[in-house]
Structure formats: C-alpha cells, structure tokens
Length: 205
Image 1 (cartoon, rainbow, N blue to C red):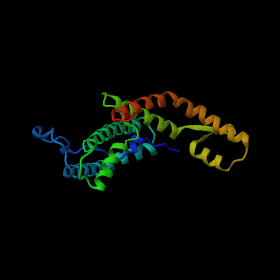
Image 2 (cartoon, rainbow, N blue to C red):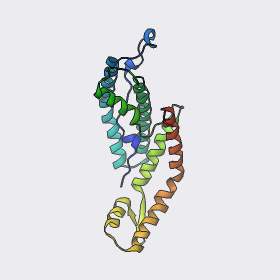
Image 3 (cartoon, one colour):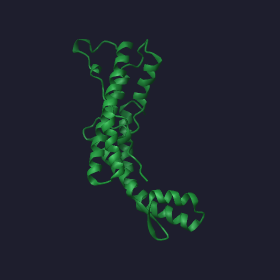
Image 4 (tube, one colour):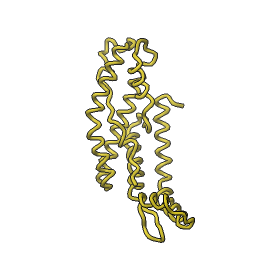
C-alpha cells in the first residue's frame, strides 16, 4: 500500500519568463493577451518537467529506499517551489478584463490547485517535501499484524474487506495504527504547520 506524496506526484510547475517583463513596463497592468501567453508557457514547461518528476515518484513508490526517498524529496521540493511561483504569477491577472473563459479557468486552477504549498522562507519547501516523502514511505513499507504475524498494508486492506471477525479486525487496525499511524503524528503536525503558512502566503486565511 503506497500513499504517494502529493508533492512528488504533483504536475511539474514553472513560471513563464514573461511573468517578469522588461523593467520599463513592470508597473503596467497585464493584459488578456499576456494571460494567454502566460498559461501557454506554463503548460509547455509543465509538460517538459512532468515526465522526470513522475519517473522519480514511480521509482520511489516502487523501490522505497533512503536514496529514492532523497530523490523524491528533492523533486518534491522543486515542484512545490514552482507551484507557489506559478500560483503567484497567475494572481497577477486577477481582475484583468477580456480574459477568455478557458484561460481564466486555467489561471484559477494555478492559484487554487497547490495542495501543499510551502512559504517562500528558505528551506521550507525542502522540509515540507522531506516530511511528506518520509510519511509516504513509512506508509508504503509499514506493517501491522494478523494472527500475530506481520502483514503489509495492502494485505491488511484486503483482509479487512473480507474478514468479519471482530478480534482480527481490531488486531489489524490497532497494530497498523501503533506501528505506522501514530509515529507519523509529529511529522504530520509539522507538515500541516508549514503548508498552512504557505497557504496564508498565497492569500488563504
């Protein structure tokens, strides 16, 4: 059973170069044409970056080791930083008239689609990605017990779907919680604090 990090499985994100136009015109209000160009550039960058990001996530999900965790965390940190930049870039076009329905929808997705944003504080994205990767891997390689014998998460799910023995169901649930769920509490609490700070930075209360 594998809970893949939202950060690692997110689409690769990048801010289009035109988001910072020449200094002579930075104060000018952006236009609908620029919004179209922004979205098109981000989509191209995302398509280019998403393949290696998903390859890294797949390898980590399939072969959970310290090395693949490190790769996934590094990729996740980069993608989180890009996602936040992308969302902030999309916010430049708030209130711009003449933006097409499709472009506005995509801009809204960029602003609202960052599931676990990190604040721009140095190191925040790295810490967040490390936490989510560690929890995901702990979940993926964790074990409970059934009849006193170790059993992995996927087998627990299958057994819980068919067993009607209260004692066995309790054993599986309690052992999984004690071995996997409860030890994540500290990491989960810290992850929530970081992502809440990131959400506030993006304008969410």
